[in-house]
Image 1 (cartoon, rainbow, N blue to C red):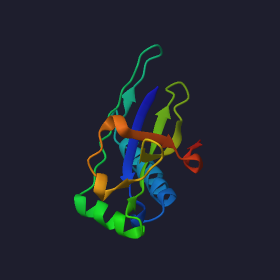
Image 2: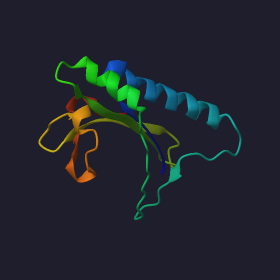
Image 3: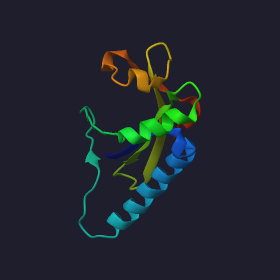
Length: 137
């Protein structure tokens, strides 16, 4: 199976997270079409049954983006989402499938991050599935 992952850190002052997720899906589909048109191009990561695959995706923002996000809420809370998609192709069928995801990032206990506590240790962060953000094709 071939696997490709794409993800972004999204701050809601930039727009609707579902629209961002749709854009990721469209971008991946367009990239796939372009790459498939090139002969002998291999893309994605090969996943062999019984093996493990670890893919690291880094998502960051400039400090000014967090300041903008904090001004959207009267309490200065910064709502952070991680939106993305995993695309996978079974070599036997040659068809690509997709699974989309959205997670929210909060401090433990479900409290949103604020600029007052901008340096939060990883052990104090929770990444939780955002119920309306999952799909599969």
